[in-house]
Image 1 (cartoon, rainbow, N blue to C red):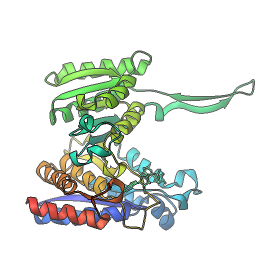
Image 2 (tube, rainbow, N blue to C red):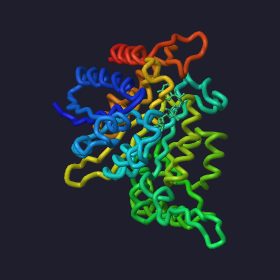
Image 3 (tube, rainbow, N blue to C red):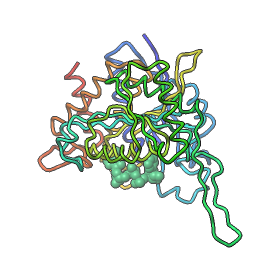
Length: 369
Ligand code: NAD
């Protein structure tokens, strides 16, 4: 029997509601596999601020460092709009990303056949879509120094952000993207703007060097980031894995996300480097959406993004690809039965709440077992 240490951080708003459904699915997996989960749970975001005066406590950080993986719900809400900047709910998530050095953000964009009609693109363009955007998460223009607004002698102001990348930062995200491409269709597209940015020139150079050095079996392409955005809405199925920097990844992953219909469907993973002594990597899995204060407490939230985040944890942290496939298949199966939460509901479907969707996925898992 293998035991995995899992830290659950439900957070605020709908976070705890969707995490409840994940706990039931963890129970199902334990019953139907050779693994057990040692779970701890703690506060993060506004709920942690209310309890401890900060958005994540040192105790919770210690649990995070000790966990094999973290499942994170969502944070934030109007209630905490006026708390000091460093203590705002989102600061808890940023601290986790920084302290655990989660440098790679994986955002799959999967369009379930049953939801192809909900996309803003024609169904035939998105039906069966399955792409993965790998975004560098801890470098680039969001963190580069100087980062400031200064007042000039003539009274004008000047704002500066700095786009900066080193060889090793590009190498580690590129290697991860090549490794992921090998587990899929062995195709990687690298996206930057080498035509106008020095960081783009270096990015392309390093990606090519990594390719030559150990990944020549993977088909590599390069595309300018503006063209990539255009191609994502013109013919998204031409892509499989796309690797890009922090800024372009932010934009491109949101474009790709919207091809699939609803925020309530989108999982993500943030991964660190493999520790050479333990073979483990730090990892945090979370839905792309926020705490949805407008529907919190009504039992209407779609738990699929959270449950699909658990599927990513099974796949990328616990080497449980078979169980991850089962869970992904159960989600697709429930959608094929026309069961929908409000955010993905259309006329003629069966409308359920958060618990109803969780129960339907459990029933589908039983049916598949
Ligand atoms: P949001 O993602 O919370 O909600 C946007 C819209 O999508 C809302 O109408 C909401 O009801 C709906 N929605 C989102 N998730 C849903 C789900 N699972 N099921 C059904 N409907 C869903 O974004 P927002 O309203 O801009 O932000 C609300 C709060 O969340 C803010 O405080 C924001 O800072 C925070 N936020 C947190 C994260 C995070 O924790 N990673 C991410 C984004 C926003």
